[in-house]
Image (tube, rainbow, N blue to C red):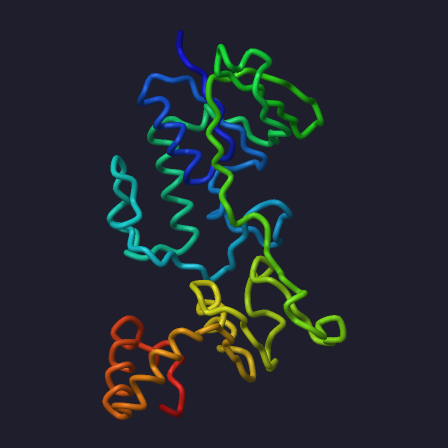
Length: 259
């Protein structure tokens, strides 16, 4: 008897899971709450609650050779580092090439996943879904693959910012960020300098009066301070050289006027 598998979500993990199931002779059914594949890589003009979101300028920070699926190399005409629209195109080509779309039930939300009453014997799961029209359905599967991602809920720890309730200017999580529109001639602080923080800081700097980046580099500072006390000029030079090998700060407008 062919094992039936429920796949929740039709982003990159979801579509590859569908194909993986088919390769192994399984019977996958994918439930996607939106009307399209792509997950994180499907750009939306307005953020949708419960879904991942990206901004207009996003370009993937891995080369296409490093991020590609082993059984489906990206087209040669796509750039090494793809814009989000090109990543979505690649996912569409993947789904079309392996005929995965018929396995996806769009605009179908998974309401619950629970073990069947005889789970200890069968190992099966009850998956309850709801269609766009509000119709609910419960089906039994032999396995469930949860491919919903982990960027769907923004984390905005306002309690860590005393006085935020009296702050008169605008503040928001990067989940809400679409473009630098509306930040022209503003003084902007970006908290966090990971991939998104650095990306958004550069994007906003093209129109803002001033952009400041705020990050926690305590350990880095302590190590640097110890070394710089012993060999001040040499440490400065070597540190700047190392940092610029990884990222040309001048090219991206991140090089400060001071050392």
